[in-house]
Length: 272
Image (tube, rainbow, N blue to C red; front, side, top):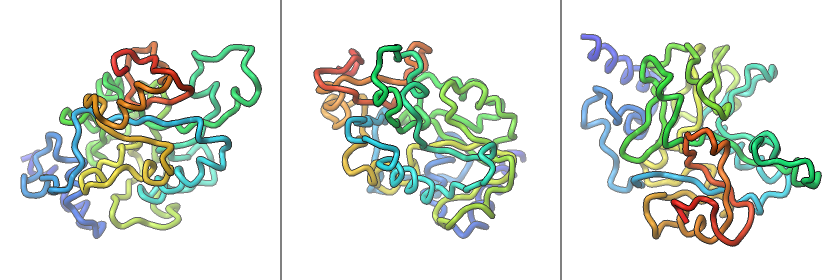
């Protein structure tokens, strides 16, 4: 009975927003929910991988202004609200200085520019995501078919255990109803409600339609996206040819987002 009720609420919630149900349900419910099979099958053009990953070439960004169009397209695609109070800020992808993004990879002799150069940061879609273990309702889950860490907003009870568990600060909580603060609503992506957590989803809804993530499309080649398990993929070639780092690697979460900071081979031997 409870499963039927949950299924009804999921479908009704999406339909009430006037959305096309297929890509949304593909992304959020196909991974184990009770939604009917006819609504969760991916289209024939869907992009698939065993282990999605991202490589960001930091050498192609010289200022915060270079990052703004990438952040803006993500915000527009996913109905990110704009609150005046920064305490209520919702972030899926944002800019952070090097010493904040990589606190364990700094030294006092770094030049000022390197210390303050902006980096794009987002959910790392970890191989061992602590947020998933912390969630009591399975609102946060790792999709085993491709490694993406997703959220079912309808299951989120707002306990924020996942936020406490995430070492990257990649999750935001809706302290207020976000809808009135969305500059321009995208009807193809669901709006959230007050009291739920949200984060980057690697644009799972776009992958279901055969499109790369919005940030990748807007990056003019600075961000690559592909299958980390495929030795012939674009991301594996980049990792082999360039020196890369990951955020807080010592914690053992195994982030799927890599940053190129130089040439001459990757520090990640398993993907080298």
